[in-house]
Image 1 (tube, rainbow, N blue to C red):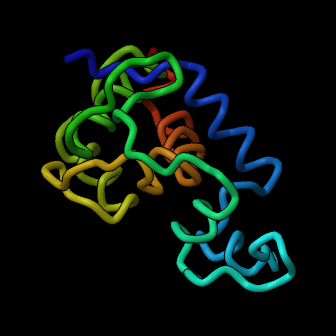
Image 2 (cartoon, one colour):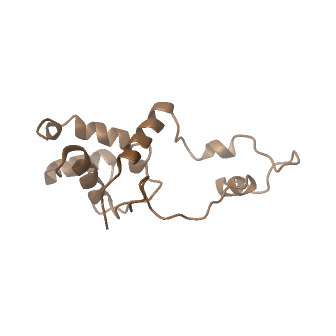
Length: 137
């Protein structure tokens, strides 16, 4: 499995943080979407509202913007981001510090919707680029 994270994912995550997108899941449910006839949809869950809007909510593969598979856990995610940014992995203690910053351990499973690959990715990138590793790349 290729554990690289494409530059497009990083750029996309940065653009989301700049425009303020990627908020909580309740935004759609609070938007006042009705069933088309003025009545409220019968299912108030996010899935129900999305289905009422005709949005396909079927699970999709865990892929980044380039179609590469996401790592299975947080440890390989941090390693892949570091390899992309500073052309090396972090020392084990520094990698553990980055994982503490994300609030995860190296073995925690990574899901497609996790904050680390969405709104929190720019902060991880900034953390790595603001480290001595960037100066010695």
